[in-house]
Length: 542
Ligand code: VG1
Ligand code: CO
Image 1 (spheres, rainbow, N blue to C red):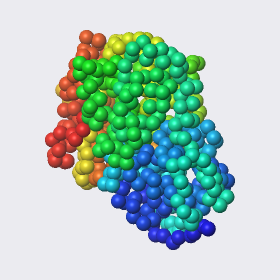
Image 2 (image 1 turned 90 degrees about the vertical axis):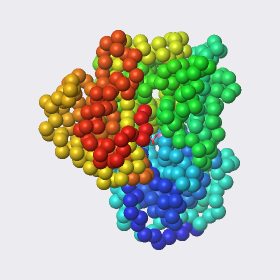
Image 3 (image 1 turned 180 degrees about the vertical axis):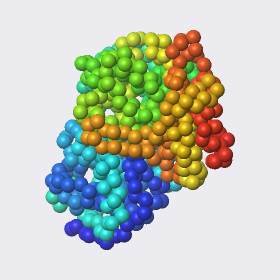
């Protein structure tokens, strides 16, 4: 029943910041998926008879790839495969299910915030037994394997009915189709005080949750509407669609414009939120205020203990390097550790496993905690609802009070998308070559304190990760970071992260781009980005 199929390596099956991401037609090439999946299995050891969790965000090609994986995992010798009904499961839910059932690992099918559809993106990511993304030593080994693979194994059986709950056998392997929401919802019910949040909604509190026609819809409906009693219709775009209904499921004020406009308008509900393709990112908007993900991390860290699951407090906070330093202020005030890691959730796993940190976040709208080993969009929303239920103040006031206490970190990210690779490399090189001579130099009022090419030494397993972004730090606390994206599928994407610290509440109401004008000008001057890319302005400003 197991067929061994000869194959030849494909170039470029290198996992990036979060798994392998390519255009759908690339994944549709014969054997492309099979090669990568077999390379994962070839790299792993000791999974015979154990459990694999499989789920995806429902984007185009999800169902076909699920069938291939079920048949290949059976051929590889897994004992049980838990797959979400319809092939659906959010990234945080996959992480939760791996942990709950002690699975060997999981495979997530998603290109997350990248657009979907026949011409959109697809992605495959492997997660290890702690529920988190495979660390670099595994992804490097998988990539090495893709270069030498010569055959794959697949069970020669008809497609499994993934729409019906229940168990089917493929040889000795049990395929179990599970409800993708149940285990996750149960975990949320244990971490949060649902009664307190129900009281908030009962008091007339209103909300809109935009699931962007991606995976979080069924989760948000069940939890926010059915269990927490928010009005029917609170969750919009709640059905996962293969092309996300044409949405770009990246929950930022640019792509979630409808929600943003509603929240800034006269008929805004009390609170707004959105999540991305695979449900691990979150957007938080109060009436009249967009909360930057960096501020959200800091505010949540200061309130985590309000949720019963964290009643004993937090052990520490971790943020990715480009994330603003707002969380550092909170860590300092609370007297807990603060860790700065490279971009990508995989770097938080060891810190969480070792209980050095409880809460983590990234400027790209990812927030999460030790409850799983992925960022978790809906979890962040439930923690916000927890603090709103407790404080009973508008989001705007909560944010302003936070700034008054800790200072405000003005923050923005400028993305230059689909830049030719050579031009993007030239920008990075231009900055890199100046690093040794920058300290001490002044640009108007900004004086460079230090500059480096960020390298991370993992304090838990001792591994080193180099070339994780170019940093220029100024002596007034301002900062510029340059990085190349590791999730794009078209040319290169340059990310320029800009930050300025302002302690004085009298200066906390400046429009963000205006507040950062000096830093932006220096960032452009230093890199020559406009000349090298031919782009006078970034493609996306968030
Ligand atoms: C981006 C974000 C990063 C995030 C990653 C995966 O990576 O910047 O913070 O961890 O996406 O998120 P990059 O390399 O393009 O900057 V998701 O929700 O797309 O899995
Ligand atoms: Co995502």
